[in-house]
Image (cartoon, rainbow over all chains, first blue to last red; front, side):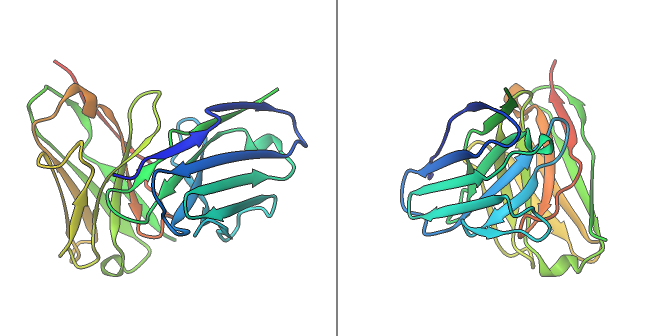
Length: 107
Length: 114
């Protein structure tokens, strides 16, 4: 199975900061990667598909990039509602695999 | 609007079985693959299984292969997860999600404990 290594595992930042989260795949996955946001007690919310395409309704401060093995999620200017846990998911082949998550906390 | 509603969770002893259901509405169920994803307490997300739109193909995580079976009834717009030989490490909230990942259920808690 493809392993997804996400970093950092946690991150403290302030409102207005620019933050970047990274996912690395153990083998090339083209651009078959999505990003998800999860708040406590809630289902995940789909943010980005195909590594860099913004899901409808997701604010433009979220962006994704990368291809092959290295991917990033960037939030250009953190808002209070962005403090959550973020996950990547490779959907290149089965079994699909998530990164271990990045908890974004308020500094 | 799209709705996915899981049911069937609960407390079960190790080695026993449980079947989860996911009732879908608001879209053409038979046009979409469907997934199960789980989250153990305090842990990250784990993809569990997928079934194709017509039910002809299924894939599983290694951790559940041979114990869990995903199925669907397109006539009733319902997805299932049959979980056999349950272990303590299967304790989690189980989510169903529509192919494309935009829509998820609210989750169903499964606790495996003696």
